[in-house]
Length: 194
Ligand code: GLN
Image 1 (spheres, rainbow, N blue to C red):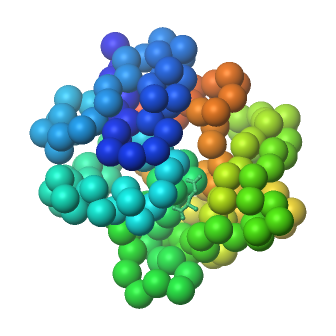
Image 2: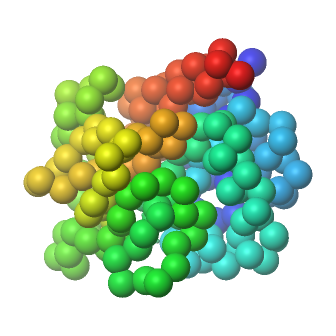
């Protein structure tokens, strides 16, 4: 059975674990870096990127997370997780895991719309995905190998670069599992190639 890890330091990791199980895969709450060895793919959940970063450093996760991404195993960052994956962050000198060739801006949908839902057209996944945005980031710029999967009001809100997938919103907060399922397919494909 495919095993999908969810970084369980802070944020909406329980909901991701439920979505993974609903898709027929095994979800593993990753609380120690040694656990990364046992999973085929990893989700970095939404939450608060500065808090997630602090805990990554505290539990000495950073090198293992970078190694995981470069090993070719799929990684999916949702909301704060997308911020963790981005190579560049608007207004910051340093990235976090810094593996996906995108520039991301935090909290970019304005104060009056801190939280909202929108129906998204997502290439290859859905043309009616009800997405929940909470103090969401967006992708300002994407490198040439990045495939743009969805935009909202002209802003990039979902993209893929090889084994890396990122979105601005919270797919785990609805019971529409098509995005989780897509990520599990990415993991299956990566395993077949390995
Ligand atoms: N605004 C948060 C951050 O900058 C992300 C919000 C979220 O993950 N829902 O980390």
